[in-house]
Length: 505
Ligand SMILES: Cc1cc2nc3c(=O)[nH]c(=O)nc-3n(C[C@H](O)[C@H](O)[C@H](O)COP(=O)(O)OP(=O)(O)OC[C@H]3O[C@@H](n4cnc5c(N)ncnc54)[C@H](O)[C@@H]3O)c2cc1C
View 1 (cartoon, rainbow, N blue to C red):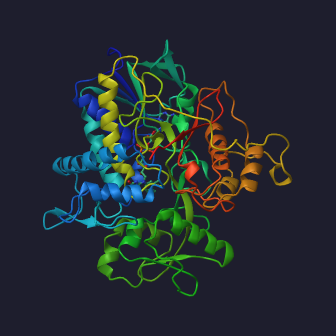
View 2 (spheres, rainbow, N blue to C red):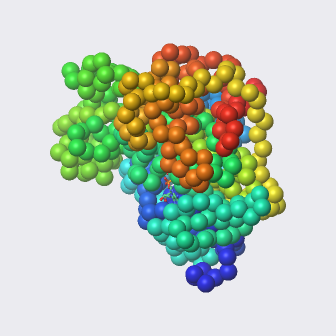
View 3 (cartoon, helix red, strand yellow):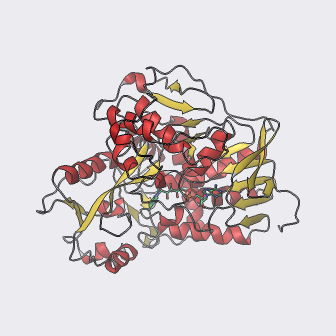
């Protein structure tokens, strides 16, 4: 397709794994696709995914066991039907990738299966050790740019969604208008709003702000996963040290080489233990020195990067601390990517399909991108023009405790969204007092802006304040237990007070 082609059937926004999976599924189904991306084609989190992609491929495994593990860490907020889709279609999607020649690491002709926290079976497929995201993204990208029906525009940020009546039909980028029959947002998450983050600057919640501006519902914004083991070396980025390292035996040690926590406990538990140790006792180190060289060799690209920064995995312990990593919250969608606005679909980390619940199981997100990207494409092409999802909301179980007014003394200076204060007050541990101060201090979003970067930090903080309990990745020191009345989703829609959708069990 070239610039003068007739308008496409589908506009896909974002060139991460979800955007690529969506565009290819639509293009292969015969549709004309316009794929826009804010940065270059390898922008976003997908090329950085290290650990791998989960699929029940082992002889001792079954999708139902994968589903059980996903639900066990999800804090009671998963959508069980969507999880079922993820594990069954996910297995097929990974087998398709293998068949199409994606070079996953293998032994005796079978993919090597790794172990990660929360998985009761070895089921993590990886490529070039810790370069899984890069290898898969590049493989799909190669197919995308060659595809006769997909037209790609780099450096084209979507800045507003276009409406025709009540339906979304396109996007605006600068003065350019891109119009189609439907739009799929695949713009990634919002973890780059935090000061310490494993994400690239692409992940600042632009897709959520666009969808909100169009009237779509946002959900579960308080649930942000902090990865326990990101590099904590002054002057260096919070480079991720994958969970796969701990799966292969890496330990978490204090300055005296004593283990501080079982490294294979769920991610949120390990992250809180690491953060607390730093606060109360001092540095935490990840160590692989005791493991055979053959194990370290599996992580060659990561080891090479650390060596550039003066750390040798065979000799040195690596200082690590938590960093904002993955967002369970997003634009509310059904299990085919439909939002509650006709013509607007979502896929990947921008979406809240309910598969990740209150806490994502490691290596389930690349899988979500593949499976739900394909499903969003199919739905967007097949749906009637008015199709949209609907939610059944009620009043919140407790009155929203959202103070307005003067800033508290420590909130007196204006705070930007990615000020390190988000790490402190909306980090691994939260409290009513700090959240209240943060709500007062954060700049308020402008309701008339179609894509306001202040929106997501504001709503995420208010959600964390409203949810007066601890569940999944959201931990409140003043309410450390999960409470049955909070088993549900906090939903936000433009012009409305927060709503609650209770899960009926
Ligand atoms: C360091 C790291 C390691 C990880 N490891 C794993 C792992 O091992 N296994 C796993 O399953 N998951 C892992 N994850 C999570 C996983 O990588 C992400 O959840 C997933 O890649 C998200 O894919 P996506 O396509 O939804 O978004 P992204 O890959 O983030 O892509 C978003 C795209 O949207 C574009 N975009 C954003 N805003 C706009 C706009 N306004 N207009 C146009 N384009 C826009 C961006 O430029 C980008 O192209 C990891 C994440 C990180 C950061």
